[in-house]
Length: 280
Image 1: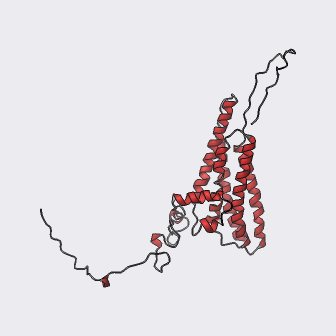
Image 2 (image 1 turned 60 degrees about the vertical axis):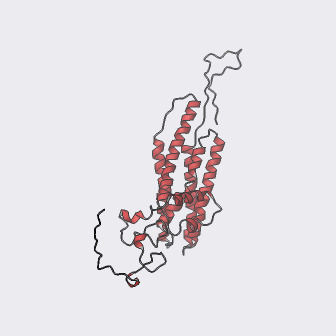
Image 3 (image 1 turned 90 degrees about the vertical axis):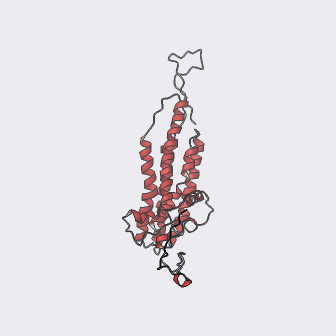
């Protein structure tokens, strides 16, 4: 066995006076930007070094763990929960959860609606015809309502002097607020009109209450009382979106068509000359 002699570095001096410790706790006075301090757990502060048009600036809003996103999703189904902004989006909101919630909703609306139409076509003895335009319709409707509408509302509220509500928080509230439509779109495969109307009403009520309960307290903090009127277009637009979901994606029925007798016989009261349709 060979041994190699290693000379010690004379620059290293022993002793406690040569050791220095630095705290990276968010509440300490040291700069902890590199470790993500000051922006909450799981988020990286890139505001100080990156411009808002760079990808590094938005990286902090996508640096969030899966458990946090899932908790922020299913909590929207609990209307009796406390303020969502203070309880779940503090100290920092994210864009990762809202983006994937809206994207998943687009996928569910198209896939489950197409699946329901396939089942209906099979039960009705009709050829299956896939409507790929529903995908673009779902894409436009969901992203306009979940991304464009809160951004437009934020700009309007900024005009009336409401600066405590950030654009990221606005998008997060609307994005997470649409989570309820994912299970609704799945259950609406059932070929029962009353059930689909009831589920649409449930989705409308839960998501609408969630949005209004988190937005109206912010409107009350504005100096101008005119800003409180914004709750009216918020509610109206929400009604329109829920109705469009029902009409475009949850409207289908089973039709049983009987073969008509071209020459009805008077002695056969059971013969018909028009097809009979049965709706569910």
